[in-house]
Length: 468
Image (cartoon, rainbow, N blue to C red; front, top):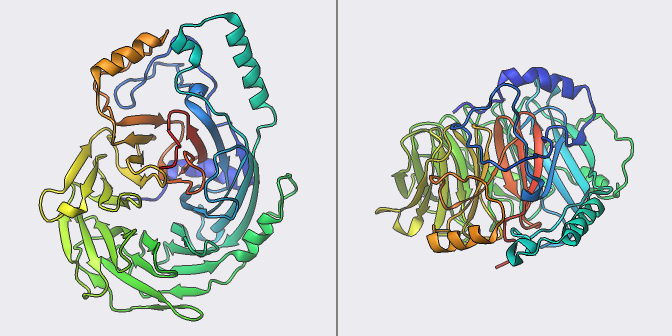
């Protein structure tokens, strides 16, 4: 599929480029009033003058921000602030690659966002469960809201590094997060050491100050031009420090092995797909195994010890495949999404037989990103070109008795459609042309997403963030 951000958004992007990067909630609609009603994208239509509004009760945190030009890809950079952080305020680091109107205007944004202050809520207020509706409870809740909402504007610090051409994809290494790999539309894969910029951001503290808006010239530590076409597929090994694979639109996959000061890239590629390699994922448990998906509609499993052909290939979809995600908590599970809007879950233990575990056709436009939660083995986030980010819990099943009991406890019910899949946990909207999402590996329940009109940080209130 074409991954470039639509040209119709460029005029807006150009205006953004003349401004400094900023955190903003301007793209997030105002609070809804009146009785709740579930609005289904692709099913319901907005009448003239109507607009969608979000319910703040649905989020523990929601904020938009921009790094300038639209970004097709980004990654969260692991930090040393704590392996598992559940208490506000939060701080996060990331890297993002732009898609500017002119090739020479592109850059990689290395950013830090601090002063992220949110709220913690139960999915069902205690007063609703107990049938207690006294005024004191409501007034105390309002006071709590006011206290939480004071001084909640996050602070964005940004460093820019020049990049030749648009950034198709960017990934930070798990073991050494300051090392990042980029896939450019020039056909080059590059590895960068961003430690000077990350160190500078770490020293910037939590106080806003005038940012240096320069685009720095920084030399990558490795450039590989052996691909015969541009690409999008790239992944660092979670088990072998510095090991990398990159795949291109010309059906080829190259293996990168680290040496003392750089990388040796095998110029003899892995070949097995009959069309563009769209995504790559290393196994979370087997150091020599990786998976790929392709426009040829197949998923392939490769073993770097046994040659340049796939060990297994299976047709996974009836349309061009775009993305895959290998579950790091349940390593037998792999998710995939394609151009027809469907996504599937497969059990790799049954890959030679009928490995399909689940198949969902909720989205009606291409799936652009899919990622398993790093904190819950059954939870998955999906983004689509239909402007929706959805969260799914595969452990959920429809229980009529439990649902009736839940409804009885609630005083007011939205008119929920009956045909929604019971595994659909959350729907986030408000971004246009969503491109990529990532769970924060150290902040349970936090998702960051990028789209043509900027980034969102969100923490749905109905996600259980208990660490298994």
